Image 1 (cartoon, rainbow, N blue to C red):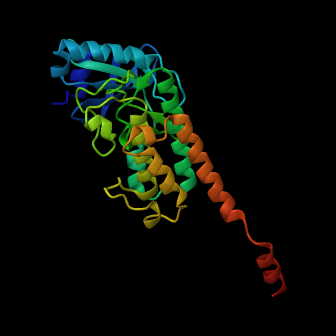
Image 2: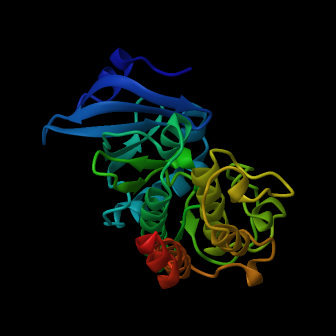
Image 3: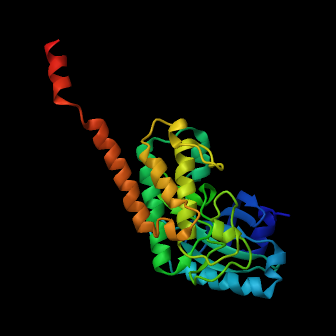
Amino acid sequence: DVPSVEEMNALLPQYAFEKLAAYGGMGAVFRGRQRSLDRPVAIKILPPEFGAEPEFAERFKSEARAMAKLNHTNVVGVYDFGITTGGHLYLVMEWIEGPTLHELIHKGSIPVRKVAHLGMQLCDALAYAHSHKILHRDIKPGNIMINQDDQVKVADFGLARPITGEAEENPFGTPDYAAPEIMARQAVDQRADIFAAGVVLYEMLTGRVPKNPRRSVTEYAPVSKRWDDLIDQATHADPAKRIQDALELRARISQVITQAAEAVAVVPVAEVVVAAVS
């Protein structure tokens, strides 16, 4: 059961709760205002049963502290965390005014240059988190905010954990975006986030998540076949054969969009001369 705005104002009086923004199985997000600094915030509230589990609560605390250390343009900032008197673990974050990437995708087709622009920003966020040994584990359009300046803000590091290369004890994440090694409870590292980013690229280009076997992006959009090659390498089932890190993926996206632009710009001189004469 999601608490009401009135209940949350009583539980956390230091924040003025304004409205319920979103909710799901892992909790609810409210828009509110931090009274002391008079700034808008997003407050994520987890169900009380999570707060009642000491192991989960301790991990939540560790992850919140780790996320608070991530200060990057493309990562949603974490301001505070704790547990209410009602037993709800909560996380206070930067409020982003704008849609999720999921909402943007389902509004209609996204221009290919914008896909590249957003994709490279996602890579910047992942590269930064990975450099701080943080693995997101749940990259998907619903966890990617787009602000009014078309700036990517990666949110919801609720499933994040340190990059250790250890096997997954539980297959967390969203199945459509989860790398095979997550679902098979094998060793997981930053390449799992690369897999998810590859799926997100496909979804931005086509408006749908890929099925198995995956159909070419060119069946859904007038884009270069090079996108298929890139997505194939980002989502390879074998992590050793996958694109290895976020900076490499970013470089590949930049290369694809540059090559596509150059291909469109090149017109044979002979054709220009014939056209001028005729």
